[in-house]
Image 1 (cartoon, rainbow, N blue to C red):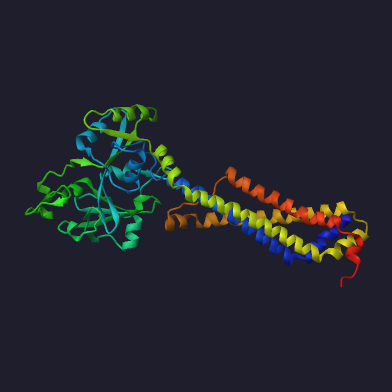
Image 2 (cartoon, rainbow, N blue to C red):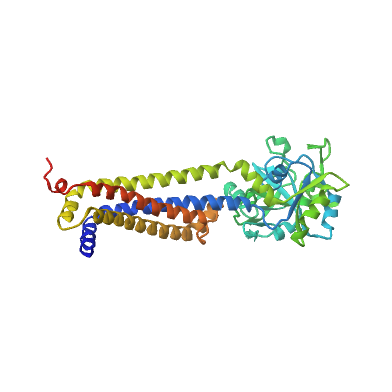
Length: 420
């Protein structure tokens, strides 16, 4: 057996170019399988962590998914707003640690405008409870300061000190522009991979200021409040769209949720962001199912390619196998040698693919977070990743049995006889 293994090793070395291509093919397949699985997992994780550290989101009574869509993802519009007195009452609740009001309804060149307080920059969390970080500038302080998300600044080419005009609603009509009250860019946030990147942030007083001479979504005829005179007016907001709530103890989340649902001043509801995000993913998670289907297809194609390559090589090795039979190797020994060779080639390909995958995640994790908002992280293999690697190894070994079975059936005379 030792002599046969030595002879087989020399044979493999003589075919090193072809076997190297097989190893490279398996490595690329493994890399693609693991890459698709990692992207699928991290995309879902980033989606589910668009807002983290927030225990409850309070809004007017509507559906949980709808409240999540407009308060977090800036999609759709609220059916109603929350009175400022209700916001203050919730903030004074003994179980509430902090609140961040969110006021929506305006836009700037297709990007949502978010009116909020400075507490937004202190308490809002995304990803693994990561805080918002300013890449440039500072948070807003005066009435007409604006802080841009990373995508807004990049796509529109804005820099600090840029002047911008907000629009009422979606900005489809020029008559809805607040041209008399421009804002100044004082800060630009680092990329988060969340809707924050696609938002223009201003203070609640700024949101109130641009609507001093508006009512019911339209400018009041004959009334105009210049920007330099807004400080003479009360800029306390009358209402907000939603309220992010952080509790002193997570144990109180359901009791506070029930109290908000029974609020007497106005009909309100409170949702748990994580639960609502899971419901939303069930609706929009068709992309995940598509990636799973692609992963299965890649696995099948890679294993089919392995079988094809080994079977094609077997036809060229018929004389070699016959010589091994002539020097004393039995059919079972040949079958074992071919199966071991296929398993070893598969193992080398899988190990190479895993190594390249780890290097790419380490090298490109920061870049993908910056460019696409998807932070790829190298971590302990998940159960799915282990199953994928194991399936490639087992599939490669089973594939190598096919040429081994064929070699078992080849007769001695078949390999030694000259072919016409």
